[in-house]
Length: 117
Length: 114
Image (cartoon, rainbow over all chains, first blue to last red; front, side, top):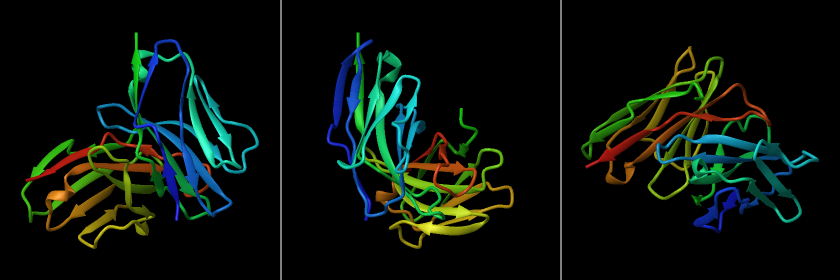
């Protein structure tokens, strides 16, 4: 069974600083995908970044980067130069890797990030 | 914006009633998944539809059912509503099944059962 663990219920960061949101996962499938989503209070899940289990390099998307440590089964999200608009709930999610898995995502419990002046 | 739209945005129903939620997927996307997100929790996978057929289901009872139409839009139906069904219901669409496809979510429908 898949499992995603996010151990930080809440995080604070000062504007313009970097912040790391932790995510560990558990799966026996050698092929899988890891996602991070941002959910503002409006409810929409906004895709941020994706890392495939066979990807050799850590994924980056603008100010977002994913620190993928496969042996430790961790996929931490790093947000650089935090902005007030980054304040939201952040979810780590994993997708089953085999073809036909489609979009069944297993989510963690989320981390509430608050960016302060 | 992702191009995935859900309706209605908010809904209040009475216990025992039935409800239908709708999702219009992003143009060209043929896979739609539904998730239930209770307050303070991460989304839980309900089921997925691919080319109008259910293709994967989470740990939800049969009173949760769905449809996907030829234009790939989708419905989630919940019968015999219970108080615990109160949640944000999210739909996600993607282009095709595969390892690298992103799932784009709609803004969700907030269902309150009283």
